[in-house]
Length: 274
Length: 310
Image (cartoon, rainbow over all chains, first blue to last red; front, top):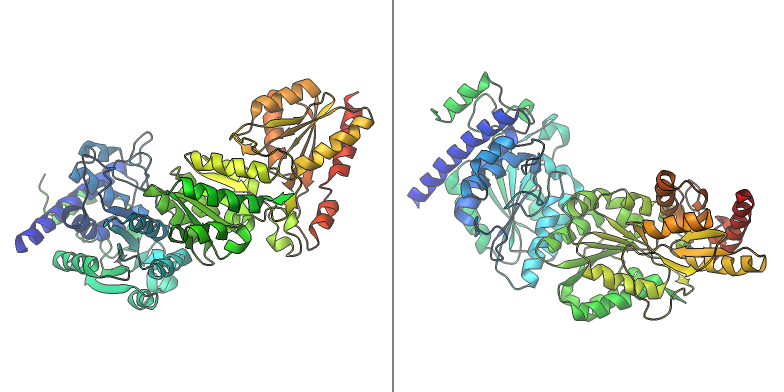
């Protein structure tokens, strides 16, 4: 297991490098929230989820919804690493004619099942998928990554209510709680704490973790799968811009990309020599 | 006479037996929208989402993403109004196979008043790319439309009414998405109508006949995509168009016809509908009269437009 965790940590480091390079190239996109969510996305795709890059529409696959759709680079580098499409495609992020849209788009990107980006809608779709899979008697699970600022949207709580009402225990929401949103601290813009208490009040199984501790992420995902009768929320404390001190804990890096001056230092922080 | 929502309930229950991929969602109005008929027959495929329309739309999109054919229903004002952005982002943008069947459209909702009278839903839905918009004339056409919609792959908005409406089509009428129907032939002008206004136009055409005015009635069951062929033919052959709908004249059928003809065959035109205002409380028949949504208005407009032709 220790080896497995170390593998995932190394994978996540490489994905961070890919995020930084991709965003530097595109000069448009969201750095902070991609780096805060990547450890969880990495654990899902390389440890937990059943999926088949050679057959993106494979019926037996688990489903993934990136509800905080602006973290699309985190998803794209992961899908590329899995082999859903060539890594070169990443360099076309947000370009006219590219299949890598600014926010996840199911129409063009292999491995993307739903369109997200308008915040607050992903959990509803994830629960819809969970209900449909259950109706068919399938064991497949649905994972959704949400932002903490996103929880300010009322639809999230409509979905939380419905998932609990319908006992969607094949649904797991991972809250990337980095504490920052565009206008500043989530607690100051519109306080959503306590996230755990809220999900508990809505009838969810709640697990609190450090969202950058691969061991804790993996353990939480295993616990979520084992829990029956209610959906699980993994409330993950994270750091916006994690891994690159230039970007860490800075709301200003929400929708800002690394510039030419920052790139070498960012890559150095990530242990990248090339 | 049957309400289009009643026909919807019957059609859903029938289709549910033929296609087990069909699932139905409602937002606490299953008795009024008639989805309750389906719920009784197929309880495990019915999801009451409570009074939470935005989540209902997103949930339907998720169900479609795993291969289901979701029909979701609530009143038109809540479906197209509260659910607009969710419909745009989660349904229309990905071309999700979600069927939005909104009931209680238009002013005939009646006594609940302007807050509940949706006179802009067709315009809102028509403005969204990938969306097909259907407004059946009667119960028979509704049954055909629901069958066609279930077989069609992609997002659809169907607008139904609350009250019983006169029959226009015979039993077994086949509905084709995107196809208009010439209900009454005529040469002096064409009534291009949708929803319950088609029956009013048929009455108006009969009365105009006695005055020596030959009015064609072209029923448009699918507002989007518009049957451009039949609309153009009507413009070219009769030279005068009166549109009529239980909806705002902004952005609905009248808007669609005007936009199309302005660019292809500028034609004398009048639009009958609600003129940029909200509804108000009252009985359905009183309201139709109050807003001029009846055969009398159509007759007046027909006389006027025919006189302008000369």
